[in-house]
Image (cartoon, rainbow, N blue to C red; front, top):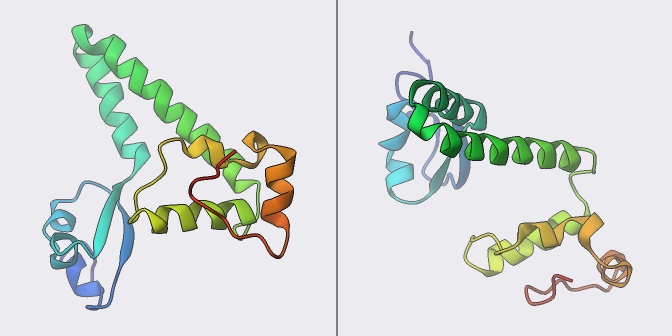
Length: 141
C-alpha cells in the first residue's frame, strides 16, 4: 500500500502545516510529529465518537443515562452544524467568531451560541455587516 495515508499519515504534511485535522481513532495520528509539536490539533470524528456512546449505553446498563446525555449533546451538534451549513462560509458572523478565537489564542468563546446570527440583536447584526465594523471579543450581544 505505498502512498497510503494509513501507513504514515505524518509524512503527508510538510513542516509548515498548521491547523485542525479531522480524524478517526487510528493511533498513528496521535504520534505524528506535527501533533506532538502542537502544529496540528486532532478533531475526532463525531460519528465515531457517537458510536462509542451507543455501545456504552447498550453494553453497560449503569451508564445508559450518562451515554444518552452525551448522545443528545452530539445530536444537538449535528443540528447546529446543519444550520451552519445553510449560511455561506464567508459570513461576517463566522469571521467575527474566528477573530475572537484567534484573539484568545485559538480558544473558543465560553458561549459560542452567542455568535449565531439568530441569537444576535438586530443592532449588533447591522454593526457586524457594516463595512466599517471591527469585531470585538468583548461584544457578543
